[in-house]
Image (cartoon, rainbow, N blue to C red; front, side, top):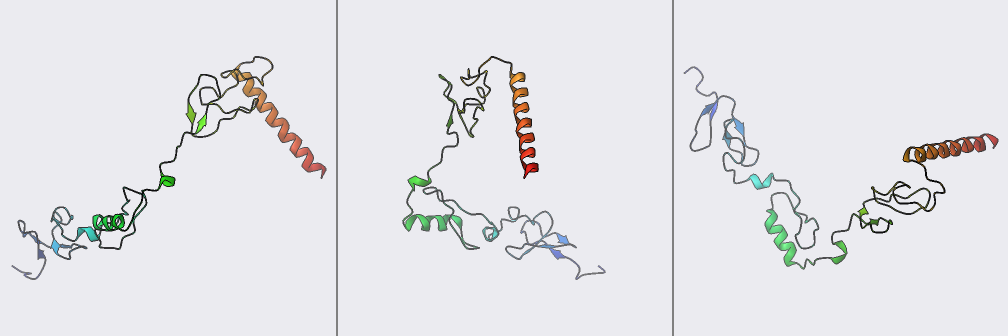
Length: 168
């Protein structure tokens, strides 16, 4: 053999392959070949030191701070033993809170969908004036006609704002 000092043997007991590009495990510091460098492949006893996760307490749903190298189960257990109390104010907040005002509809939406004519909140299905029989509408027009009227009102509002800014 010409280069007896070149390369190193894999530290995995079943492998011991002579590798000319050995890899050092950043958790336990041992030398491995490319097949055994993963923590799970060589059953690394120090892998938990590299696991960067923030455990959440199952009782109070708050993150539990932990130092690098500590085991999450031990830290969460200590947190629970120190007097962790489920906080009723931190309970899951409702997302769908905006109820549809159309009689008979029980749907709720995540955000408000207010009708421009009657100023009431509706669900996605009843948001257009024709869909909720809007009392603020004087004559019946199609949805396309309603959209055209809204664009006309917006353009008039913009032109009025421009005129006011030029008069100053």
